Amino acid sequence: MARQRKTVITCAVTGAIHTPTMSDALPYSYDDIAQQAMDAAEAGAAILHLHARDNQTGAPSVRPHDFAPFLPRIKQATDAVVNISTGGSLTLSIQDRITPAKTFSPEMCSMNMGSMNFSFHPLANRYGDDDWKFDWEKDYVAGSDQNIFRNTFRDIKEAAETLAPHGIKFEHECYDVGHLYNLRFCMDIGLFKAPIFIQFIFGILGGIGPEVDNLIFMKRTADRLFGDDYRWSVLGAGGAQMPLAATASQMGGHVRVGLEDSLFISRGKLAESNAQQVTKIRRIVEDLGNEVATPDEAREILDLKG
Ligand code: KMH
Ligand code: ZN
Image 1 (cartoon, protein in one colour):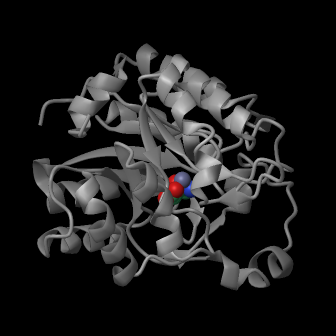
Image 2: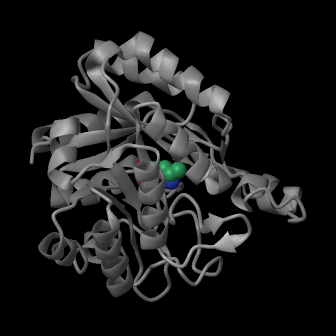
């Protein structure tokens, strides 16, 4: 396959895992989500992966009325592809999680490809700062039941069948190699059709670790399972974000950054905004010889409904 010279940047603006107490830069009000999304698009993000939050508290929300105030503003001000999460937050049912995508019928939405334990890795998330203390019993063991990300075949079927009539392109979130096999199986039974778009995710505690060896392994496995039928991108959590994105762009893949996935801009330094992360990866991608895709180029590369 010819080497991909255009790199599509996705920016995941706020997510549901980080809390506003962790960084002042994490947007949660309608205005801040809209502004940071618009700034990220201006900086070079072709795709905006969006969650909503309660306007006052910042708690994750899948209520359509928490998306409604910012989606039209982003659409009006930018040409970026809107990608709405169906991951919602960990404790919600799949019916609740798909409600925003069903309601707003965006060009893209996420589709999580398996069930797993789900925590940010304490060390990875601190950008390799091994002085950071965490409480295993309190932070991990006690919260275990809230930290299971449930994506059973029933859930995947429900999401796929409900959203199919909308013609939405899925960002298939694969957190480990087994999820690639789940995806292949779902394609074989006709749930998803080629060409697909896979987000390889590294560094979530519960999924595959953020080593370059693992990226090569995931890519080689996907090549074997999907051949030319897939496009791919990389999301490294925490400190793995920029190094893995840079590597992916050199391997012909696309990249995802944003405060949903990492609060940092460099070792030990919090990012000031989503746009700052987009600007950084854009500079790396361009310095290494690739071009950043415009939203329309992303639509063509990923075969979106447009
Ligand atoms: N939070 C990311 C690790 C989703 O929104 O569906 C994965 C994600 C899931 O973005
Ligand atoms: Zn997300």
